Length: 128
Image (cartoon, rainbow, N blue to C red; front, side):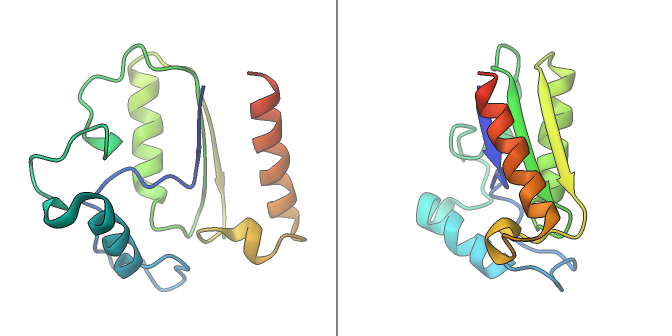
């Protein structure tokens, strides 16, 4: 089973106007991808093993759990990856937490949304 928590899936996701509430910024994202890929970030020769959104065949992947905050800069790529997995016939459990920025369960661990996210994550692991 894949358990993808606020996943960083696309090295091409380096700019957007949606950063006003981001706790993980596009500068952070570019730094992270650069640490992994060097000067190949966003170029055509990046492997799908490094940047899963580049995969063209998602058949035969295991059941997948994905969760993401509604204010996370990875939101669109997580939604797109979940949809692509579903289209390929994979079993997907997807959770979008409205109002949650990246790492929201660590920012306000006592919040109901953080408690719900932790419970969903643990339940997903338990059914493996």
